[in-house]
Amino acid sequence: MIHIEKAEYIISSPSIDKCPAADKPEYAFIGRSNVGKSSLINMLTNKQKLAKTSNTPGKTQMINHFEIKNIVTLAAVQKVEYRSWYMVDLPGYGFAKVSQQQRKQWEKMIASYLKTRSNLVMTFALIDARHTPQAIDIAFINKLGEWEVPFALIFTKTDKVTQREASSNMQAFLKTMGTHWDGLPDYFVTSAVKKTGRDKILSYIEKLNEGFTLNP
Image (cartoon, rainbow, N blue to C red; front, top):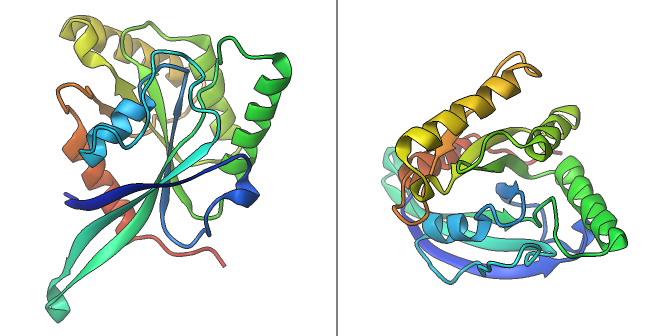
């Protein structure tokens, strides 16, 4: 599993052309507003104030980059080095209390980023495990499929309901997905409070980092 040595906020960009150079592996986190994106990023990096959390839907309004550095041991050459990569906190969909114009601007920004960001390795689509399948989540995931964007699911807030209820909601979501998809994506079960799923997600990212190559 990745041992994160450093995690720091880099920049908030209003459009993809303002993002940092696409020169290292990048992982985007997105979901419905108030699904727990910032809390998850803070849990994964073990830095509680890295991403700003809020109870107000729509708090994240730009493409937020965080640079992560971890130590990599190269046994073959007896060398230790840092590996750098990005976590990206994207605005939520299903925004509350914003104008139609603002919503369309955000949707255009998100689509442009997901479809054209050349170093984007994986998009993590966050699903709130407290709820039965939501049409807005299914619709967004189907969009990722149309855009041919690689993605995995992360079920959040499993500590907020009983284990049985969370499991039932997650299985219902996967079953609903199965009516649109030939196969199901990788998925992770998390709790930012209990740090459930942290090791599995970081190990998953580590394997993807090892296979990363820049697109020409």
